[in-house]
Length: 106
Image 1 (cartoon, one colour):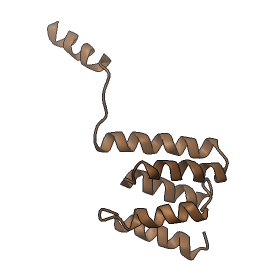
Image 2 (cartoon, helix red, strand yellow):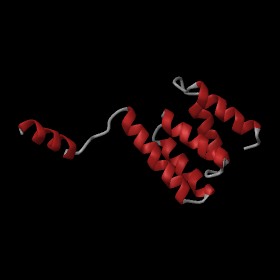
Image 3 (cartoon, helix red, strand yellow):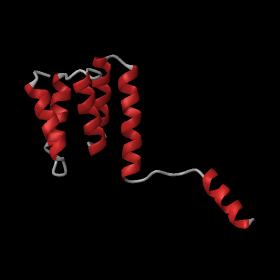
């Protein structure tokens, strides 16, 4: 019985996301904000998020949202994304997707 109680207590305990989980949750929240706003306003949201730091999930979500048309690639967002894909830990996927966006005239 004590084991069952501990399992239930564990399941009900608030889970605190840290590290990568926290970044993923933030990126998913930003994705929702992108979809709830106009593409121009979504670009401003993205710029605001990048001012807090570029992390892989945010960069990929922003790039995917630009590709889908949910986010407008404004000059300021282009600058923020350029800096994001130049960071030391930027992945090849991020760089490739950004290159495709630029080649498509995004």
